[in-house]
Length: 72
Image 1: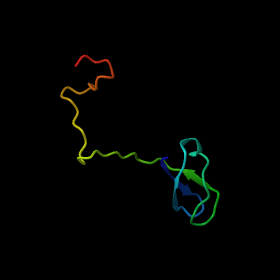
Image 2: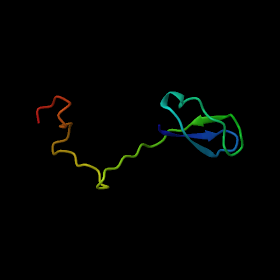
Image 3: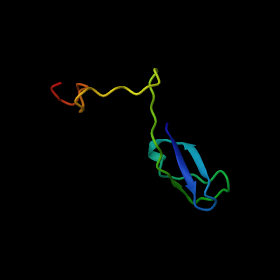
């Protein structure tokens, strides 16, 4: 399950909640002030590999992972 961030319209604090994707838009109440006026924030997705570095793109750009139908 992913974490979502919700900002409170009353106290402007951010609450994190572990929720199912289908429940993401059902905003929880603020854990700081109890207000029900919370809205989901746009969060940045982060992924890392075991090596800690991002994989390199093949020279020439484009997809080339084999599943896209390119001829590289």
